[in-house]
Each structure stands twice: as structure tokens, then as C-alpha cells.
Image 1 (cartoon, helix red, strand yellow):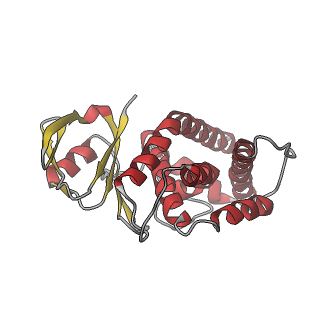
Image 2: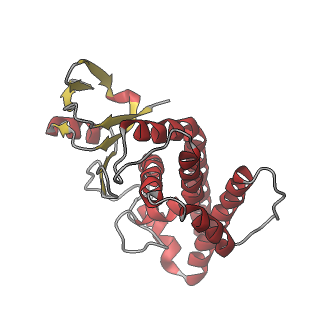
Image 3: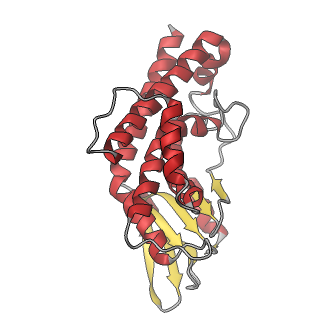
Length: 264
């Protein structure tokens, strides 16, 4: 499976250059690394990394999204491959907005999927307790908010994890030939479909954020993440990456099933 390339600036002057069909990473006091682009599914940049234009073009040519995250706050940006043509399934996506009934079905599917993951996450958090089959959106948010209130940097950590997850979903959307901007819940919004589908995965971000703060090694000073903090977030995310990837594939398949049924 292709892997995520993480580039983290911690005063080490990292530079990224295109080198034929590879990306060449150079940094102070370290040997250069060359990584073939066909081994990368996305690039995550945290901090001030110097990237030449040829590297961005090489990623675009290979359908590799780049995610930029600013240190110390929640600023982030995606760079996507440019394509002047409509995505292959754009017309099929438009079918969903043609009636209130189809939009309601879509929204119900999103909420049902999200509810399933909420219960799965709560059972993992409260392993010693017997939970009901359903708990409700309001009750779930109340529980998570109570936990989050304990930590001043909760939102910052969760935002990073959510964007890692979105990068996986975005890659699956592009690979499937869907328009990432054509959302229903988030309509007329950049990355509308990505934001819609990301709702399903929000409980996963909650879980990883909780696990981060439960770690004995966590120590955040002045709202600034240390190198060990960032490594902890990445290691935890990568340990669950395969399951997130597979769920994203399942969600995309279910989305196609909805569009297929609506064409009948």
C-alpha cells in the first residue's frame, strides 16, 4: 500500500525537490532521502517547509493531494491536482439534489453511518460499561464535550487528526472520479463532499484525540506542539490508518450504491 509522506519543520530546514519520478528530501545534518512518487498517496506538511514548484507539479501529475498544517493553530490548506474537465461522475452526483426525498436519504445515510461509529467509539472508550444500542447525537456530543473541556488544546489536536483523516477521504474521492466540492449537507462550499463524508469519521478523530491526552508522555507548553507531540499524533494515526482507509473505501462504495439506485 502507498504511504503518507510527513514533512515536519522543527528548525531543521527541510527542502523538497522533484528528482525525476521521485521526491528528494534534504535537511540540515541529515542524509538526503529520495522517495518514488508511486509509493506516496498524500503529502502532509507541518510547519515551514521549502517546496519547489516542480515537486507540487509532480504530485499533481500523480494525483497526490498535499495537506499543509500551520504550527500552533488550525490553519490548513489542500493543494489538489488540476483538471479542467468535470469529474467522471459529476452528473450522477447531481441526481441527489433533484428532490427533497433523495437529499433526505443521503442525509439519513450520513447520520446512520456516523451513529454507528459513535457507538463503536464509545464502547472502546468505556470498555467496562454496558452501553445501550443507541445513545443519540446529543448525548454523544455531551459526553465528548465533557471530556474535551479538561484539555485546553483539545480543539488543536482534534483538528490535526481530522485533517489527516480528510486527506485519506480526499484521496479516495479523487481516485473514484467524484467531485470533492459537490456536497449536499455542505452545499456550495469548497470541498463540500469531503466535508459531508468527513462527518462519518468525526468520532474517530474524537477517539484519537482522547488517546493522545491519555498518553503519559503528553506535555504541551504555550499551545505549541513539540516534536514528540507531533510524532505521537502521527504514530497513533498510522496505527489506525489501514482501518480508516478501508472504511473510506466502503463509504465511497455505499455512495455509489445510492447514486445507482437513484438512476433506476
